[in-house]
Image (cartoon, rainbow, N blue to C red; front, side, top):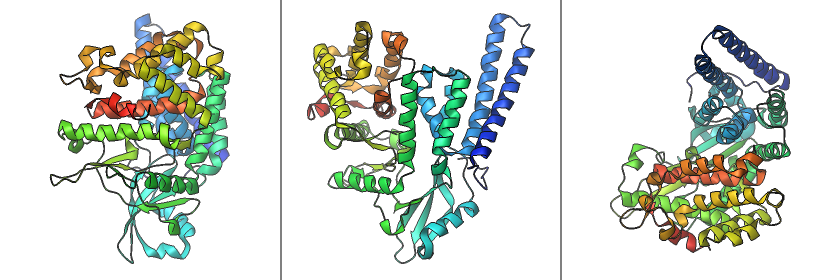
Length: 452
């Protein structure tokens, strides 16, 4: 998180438009100057200079977007995940940094908001003015209840961000289409509609509180997981208050230096959550970045390592037809049945309209994505250890899947992922990254078989 705190947010439509326009003009002017300066260079040198200049200006634009916060930043985060389809690598590389941190708002600016939201209950709490974290839509502060010392966390929604969602999205969409940075297709328009829906869900704190309670109830008897407790007496439309849950980051050395057995147990638990979301609950956490998880380390006295689930703002209730599609594709891939996968695809517009070669490409990609769950005989021997466990880090699965997708017929027909795959593919990427970072070596097929 940046040390350069903001005293206020630019939430007015005109102010935000002016900020983005100004940043765009500055970046464009610098790019033009760079191009003019390399005009008489050799072609290969001009290309190198252009990429370097684009990277520098992308960093600048991302810095300015981080200061605006709100859905502009969230849209940037989504572009970072899917930008390889329609944005230069230099831009997506810079946009990925929006996932790491954004500039915090000073406590002096937030305190009046919290006082207004809590009313007389504000005096129940001692709130630490130093934020635990700052994101695009909210900021998190630790607090202690004076009456009994209960440790709490306050998720404070930034002023005006909820009201700015639609105008922000319209602004970014207009900019993208005018600059021809993305294809002007129905798929892209539907993709943006999904982003809009996600944005409105993430600022709906009563809904997030309810979803958090659901997941806490789902997992109450499973000692492998911790879900915060919601304190409804302090929650409002703009404030979410829950129990403080300690732990260390998933990718911290404390976790990565655990024994293979302990890391494998954590990995299996994380993978089982994904299975239960699709097959049992129909509610899927569509933002599986590492900031939404912690690991609470166990001990040598039998206390297990636990996964702390922190953020439920991006949990989505999927329609039954889409869940049936996901389940059908999963079962078909599990059994290696191409014909069953074709049948599972029927009835969905983006599949029914595909050419045969494109549909075959999707099936090939799906089978590769499900490689960790395949029968050992159908898995490349070099990605299995001596015990027949699938080695996620060794498999380089993400790189192989990305390469296959780029070469497939699907890449020629779709320049933007169909909206139905937007969240599910993001879920896959997050889960697979988790397993790779943990260097998981497990028999995932045995886990998935319980849900097939």
